[in-house]
Every structure is written in C-alpha cells, then in structure tokens.
Length: 125
Image (cartoon, rainbow, N blue to C red; front, side):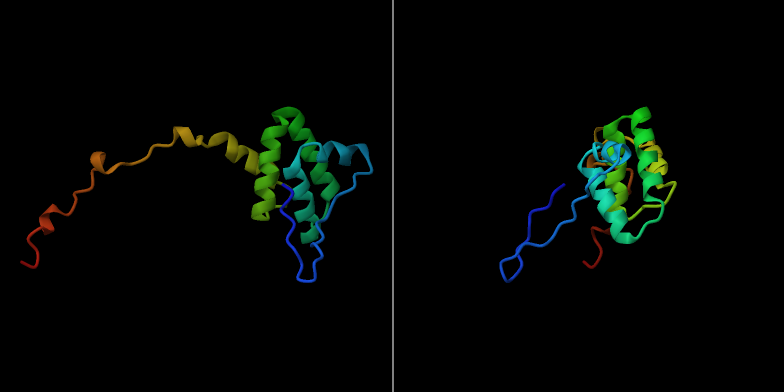
C-alpha cells in the first residue's frame, strides 16, 4: 500500500518510512504483504510495545490460516489503530464469522413490511 507521494511545497517529497528487516522473523513478517508493512509502520508510529512478539504471532497465524487472511486482519488493524496483543486473533475471528458481501441481504421497498405512508395521503387537504 505505497501511497502516492505527495509533493512538498518546496518540491521535496514527503518521507515514507521503509522497514528494513534484519532477522528471519522480520523478513517472514514483511513477506505477508503490504498490509503487514502498513501495520508495522503504524505500530511504530503509535509507540506500540512488544512489536516483535506481535509480528511473530502474525507469522504463526499466517502459517495456520493463510497469508491472505492474516494480511487482511493486519491491514484492518492498522487502519483502525487496533494494535494490542489480542487484536489480531480477534479480527481474524470476526472476519471468519461474518458473511461476504455477496451473502448480505438487501431490503427492497417492494418487499418491505413497513406500513408505509398511504394513511397520510389526505393529510392537510
């Protein structure tokens, strides 16, 4: 999720943090994708403690549930600022229990049980 580089008034671009993995664990975490990168940047900016432990947990969850699901949870956590210890499993649980967009039921006017406004037709006449 590399944002478009905004331009500074004097022509310089704005600095976007770029994590530089130094250990195999950090490399494995960043290999989860751009959403993991965003989570790491947000966690660092927020001053989150125990980042390495949370990164290791994400890698473990990815091994069990897949990179895509964990990447989606990391992206949502970064956007929402949900960076606590149990937030990743909680978000994954929520994603697993919710319906997809195609499964949602949309209420239509033609099938509504709402009584409507027909009784107000003559009001004010």
